[in-house]
Image (cartoon, rainbow, N blue to C red):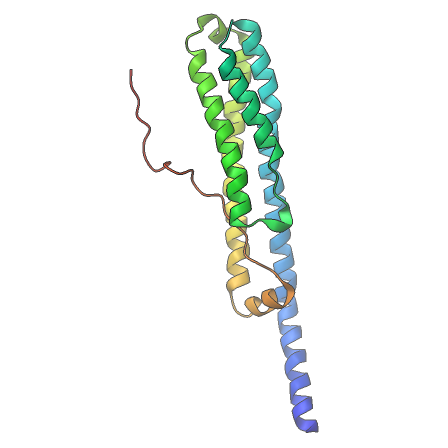
Amino acid sequence: MKRRLMVALVGIFAAMSFSSCGYNTLVNLEENVKGKWAQVENAYQRRADLIPNLVNTVKGAANFEQETLTQVIEARAKASSVTVDPENLTPEAIQQFQQSQDALSQSLGRLLVTVERYPELKANQNFLELQAQLEGTENRISTERRAFNEATQEYNSSVRRFPNNIMAGIFGFKQKGYFTAEAGANQAPEVQF
């Protein structure tokens, strides 16, 4: 009986000491995912901050279609209201966040297409600057989403690998969700003149 108890204690001690580094690794990887998520939110916030300036510039430069501006403002409000807790980066939560951001991207796209009908607006220096900043922000968003997905992949791989999967199960480390392409993104858009 004592021998079994001693073997069990040595086994538990060995497992805990062997996998304690696994626990710390999981903590570091999870914190990295949270940090990357914060950068994604930062890039989206930058875009949300630029939109009121863009809308005001468009309003001031042309007798613009109010419906298009209203759609952009409403989409921005919806996108800003959807937040994801870094502790809960599930695929469903990320998909909900992404859907609200995609709706904002679509309304911005409609705004920029409609602007083509206003030559005086296209020549406005403020508008051109804001448009360039929005394009740069979209690139930043893409870069941050890619970095988040890479960090998530590293974390998820570690959570699933042996012996980390044992520690992950014991301490409640769960896989995180990824950003995925928007539905229909695999098809080229149809351009008509």
